[in-house]
Structures are given as structure tokens and as C-alpha cells.
Amino acid sequence: MKSVLTTVVASADLAGRFPSASDLESVQGSLQRSAARMEAADKLAGNYDKVAQEAVDAIYKKFPNGSGRDIDAGTQKEKCKRDIVHYLRLINYCLVVGGTGPLDEWGIAGAREVYKALGIDAATYVTGLTFLRDRGCAPRDMSAQALVEYRGYLDYVINSMS
Image (tube, rainbow, N blue to C red; front, side):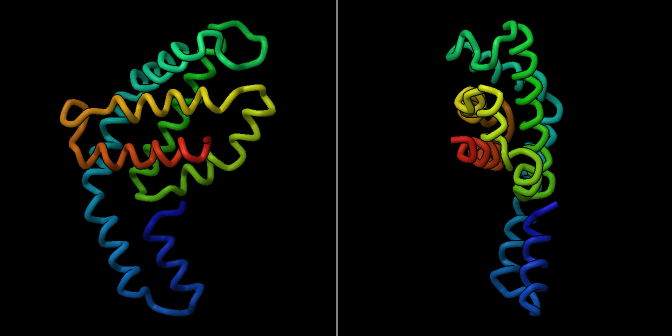
């Protein structure tokens, strides 16, 4: 799984060198933010079902008829929530490892093409994830730094789908 640590080591190894001072600064920055990432991961893991439901509610407020093929609304909402939970789980993994590897490997590669093939507008997921990014509040949900880390990964997914 790709993280700041594995990226630095792989890059140095590929170049046949020791990690540079800037490589080590990058690792140090990641380690300094690790407590905030762990807090965000813990809060998300403990509340993912409610968070996902809020995203689905925001999606269906904007897209009352959904955006999938001809399936009933209940099934559409269940599948939408399943997908949102999947993205939240990957964001949780990213928070734990301190890098975008889980999202890159399991969430982003080909997602837009899959949704297009299924007749699902990626804008629906962008709507839900944007809602989650914007509704987060420090200190109600988590500390300000934890919220920065969480929002960073939400932005990463949103930008990949936009």
C-alpha cells in the first residue's frame, strides 16, 4: 500500500541513493500529522453509517430520482450508500497509512468509467462527498487538524471524480 514512507523509500531505492533531506522532511511532516489522522480515522470508523446516510440524503435532495438505471428508489439508495461507505472506508485507510494509496488502488482507478457504463452520473457521488466535506465541524466532529486531514482525502476523491 502506497504511503509517504513507502513512496520515499521506493523513490530513493529506484535512484540508488539514501533518502534526501527533503525526503526525510516529508516523512517527518507525515509523522507529525499522524495523531490528527488517527483521530479522524477513529471518529470516522465510529460513525461511518450515519455519515454515509447523511451523504445519501444530500444526494437524493439534489437528485430526487437518483441517477442509475431503471431500478427502484430503495435499491438505488442502498447501492448508493454501499458505495459511499466504500469510499469512507478507503478514506479511513488513507488516514491510517498517511497516503492516497488505498484510494488510488481501490477507489479511483476506473471509477468514472464504471459509473458511466452503469449509467450513473459521478456528480451524484461528488454531491454526497462534497456535503460531507462541507458539513464537518471542529470541534463538534473532531479537532481542527483532524478535520483538515479528513477533508484532504475527501477533496482528493471529489477531484478525481470531477
